[in-house]
Length: 482
Image (tube, rainbow, N blue to C red):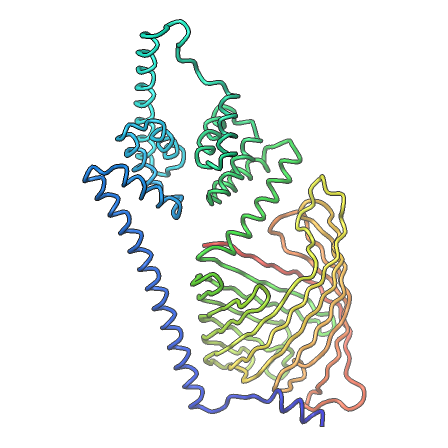
């Protein structure tokens, strides 16, 4: 009865040729539809971008400078890195006689523009504005009191107070200009680099934020500043990869199994293009290898696979990814079309830190990871299910470094009832990460594996076949924007 029930649940094989053709045809239509949506969205955005700027330039030609300024300022809220608009605004403000705002934007261009021509123009305009201000001040003082109203150079403390006043008012771009000016005069004052790092984060200029935080990490002698900079660098890189419209993620798992004396590795990568907040489309590559399998002695399903994917994140912990592409099965010397829907669920109970600052006294944290995946793989004509549990005690050893002790449990099953895909496994382990941000985590563990299906594909009667093995290896999880 048990055998019939399990077979009824798992024996979902798609063997009909016409049905396979329909699957390919439907997937192709879906891919084309998503491509059309992406193109339409990008064209709409580009048209909206150009049309608003065209209206602003038309206002400038008609002498409606103030109306043009309103459009340009609104444009910068959506495109804060558009240097040419900062330059345009500087000239517009100069035209209406608002020299303070003109100076603000010319200064921004002189500090931020990658074009030497723009920097030269902005610097020249700033010199002209300074000359005008000096002339006006001299004229005014000569008519009033030439002794008490001479133009005095600004004090550094006043400059800092002005910058922090802008911060308190939420005028982050103005604050950046002031602090950048102060930084040029005091390059050894690392607290200003820290302030600039936070300000650039606020205006979403993450490259400049990381640049300032890295300077602190390299040159500051203040341990508190270094800790804050390293924490910020980690969070920014994580956020940039997660929120980017284009990103790359890589998963690289490697281990040595002492029972089979086998080296196993899995490399999976995605190039992601964001369609909506929780929807992605892109390309993927997947390789699963081991050192011992042969066509007459298969320990793992070895393959190379590449194609396109669509991923929908229903919630923070549940998602669906549909992959289509082509695969090469190494041991069977077979090429085939791939259709692979994957339903995945996972969560972490507990929040262990990734970095231990010098002010933190707590070093021990407990958390639990839960992960489950169910998928159909057309190249194997097989349905897979997997559940993983991991209970972990993390001991922070300083900086990014930690040492973990854990219990692990795993269950795996497939519909074709292949012995190496149907088992339960439990064990204990330890992993270690050195104090380097992007260094992989190293692990060693001892596990007991219980196979629930025999080599002939029949369920065991009585005692099950057990194996005990030591495993050692490393895991890399990497994500970055493109």
